[in-house]
Length: 278
Image (cartoon, rainbow, N blue to C red; front, top):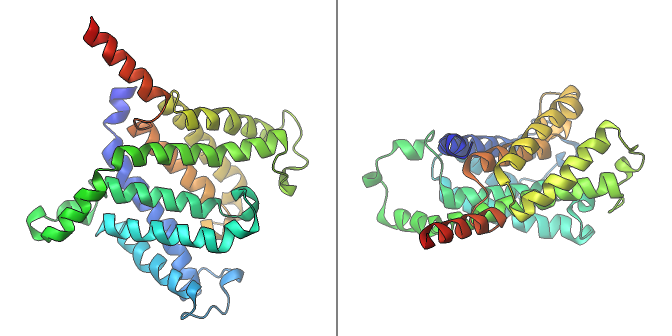
């Protein structure tokens, strides 16, 4: 499984970039041009702080989709999402599940990873010859690329933590989330909570990251089409953005692995040390 899934890592990176861009651009469109119509963004002043965020999301999301200037654009969006989280969400509660900041966090760390890993093969960046780019831009991209292994581990840990909180809330009722108050044991939502609790914990630890991520990817796809897609086609309106981002982050982790910092990395190092000793 490891060798076959690793071969899919480059195209999976492009898919993650495109999906992230699509999810982000809809926020920019909703804020600046009013489509799709989101009540929270009605009568938004384009010159306000949220209007400026919408501009970044509209232009940056479009550039991510086509894969142009991917690393600097993803770096800027990551910073914008971190700023949005601490300005608009963190003051309301410590828990992302309560303060409605889960999506901002997953956007932040997905873009942080893209800023280090680059656009993948299906992109304008990949089609441009290296000599066309400025030396300064190449140096900036190379600087970010040095952090790619660590950023992959961070993406795995953050994805695991965010999924784990859903499992804890559904199964253990902490933190208290009204929509999960009446989750009956052995119901469909309870089973999904158990998957998120157990496998989210394993993803945090980085143990058997690929198979864990594969199962979570399938669960998130199932959750989207069962709970969100029937409400409408547009993710920003059917409240399915979290599920989509979790699905494709886990798909990428399945293909690329969980990075060097985790139980799998420790096991690999021990195995390599044993092989050298023998």
